[in-house]
Amino acid sequence: MKKNLVVLSGAGISAESGVKTFRDSGGLWENHRIEDVASPEGFARNPKLVMDFYNARRKQLKEVAPNLAHFILADLEEQYNVEIITQNVDDLHERAGSTNILHLHGELKKARPINNYQNIISWERNLNLGDVDENGVQLRPHIVWFGEEVVEMNNALGIVKKADIFLVIGTSMQVYPAAGLIDYIPENCEVYLIDPNLDNKFVNHKNYLKTNATQGMEQLKKILLKIFN
Image (tube, rainbow, N blue to C red; front, side):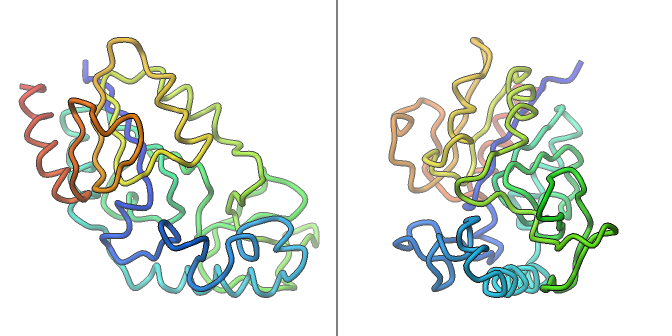
C-alpha cells in the first residue's frame, strides 16, 4: 500500500512561476490594500474594484505555467498517495498533473453567488457586476477573504490526520488557520519543510530545506524515492 504524502503548499511555490503575491510587501497586494480587495468589507464598499482586481489576476494566470516543483509533486503520485492542500487560488497544481488537490482559500477560476458557498460555478472569463446565477443572485469571486470562514478546514484536517509524510512548501506558516494544520499530523509522521524565508519554530527542524520550491523539491524527490525503495 502506498504511503500518504500530504502537502501544504503556499505562495512560494507559485511565485516561481511568476504568480504575484502579497507576501512580504507591507500589506499591499499589487498596490492595493489587502482590506480593499480581499475582505467582505472591501467588497461591500467597492465591488467593482474587487471584481477588476480578480479579473486581472485571472488574466495573469493565463500567462504563467507550472514549474518544476509542481511537476515533481505530480510525478510522486507514482510512488505515493499524494494529497495537496493548497493555500493558493491558482490552478498550477492541476495543470502540472496532480489529481488530489484541496483549495483552502478558493479558486480564481470559479465564482459563487454572494448568498451561499455551495453553488460554485466554473468561471474563466471576466466577472462583472450584473453577472448572476440561475436565481438572479450576483456572483462574486470564489475566494476566501480575510475574516471569512475557511469552510474546507474540516476536510483538510481529515487529510492531515492520515499523513505518513507531511510536506510544507512555499508558506511562511504564519497564516491561520492553515498554519495550524501541522499540529494535527499523526505522532509518527515525518515532516519536511521547504522555504527560503521560514522564521518560526521550525527553522531548526532536522528536515528543514532552506531553499526555494524547485530546488527543494529536487532534493526532496531523491529523499522520498529512497524511502519508497
